[in-house]
Image (tube, rainbow, N blue to C red; front, side):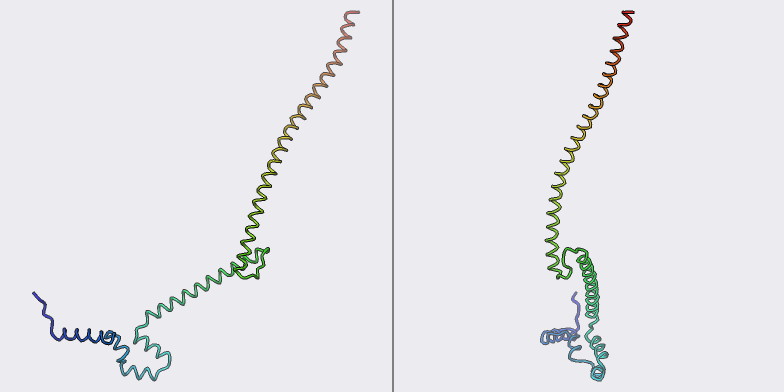
Amino acid sequence: MKAIIPRKSLRSRKQTRLFTDLLNLTRDQFKQIVLLPQGKFRQFLDSDSNTKEALLRDLFNTSRYEQWATQLKNDLREQKKSLTTQETKLQSLKETVTEIDAQLTTKEWLAEAKKYLSRLKANLERLGDDEQQQQKKVDQLDAQLHTEQELKKNIEALAELVKAGERLQAQAEKIRKTKQQVKNP
């Protein structure tokens, strides 16, 4: 079963479509731009800039754009705050690294910092090599010390044996004399 559409409604839609196609404006846009209500127009002409702004805001429904503008302002404020914080940290870092002139521009300072870091890495690598060589020397000297300590212990033990041998030699002489006395009374 077909729905019955009133003739007036069909004509109204056709007119609306024709109107929209001709002016390239919707009905609401046409009312906002062309047919400004007369009471508001007189009020608009007589009002101060704040009131004009409010009337235009109401007429063109710009609250969404105001929200965007507010959000953009807030974002900008946060970005500026973040930038200030980062600049403060960078200046503090510049002042900490005394080997590089803190008055250089950030770009120049970063270039110098990269060069300085490269030099530090090269020095660190050289020091690492030096450390390995020194460690080898320490290991050799440690081995030599251990050998000399063993040698010293052996020399001390030998000296004790020599003393013991001398004591035995001295006793052997006494024993020999005593043996002769015992044989020859």
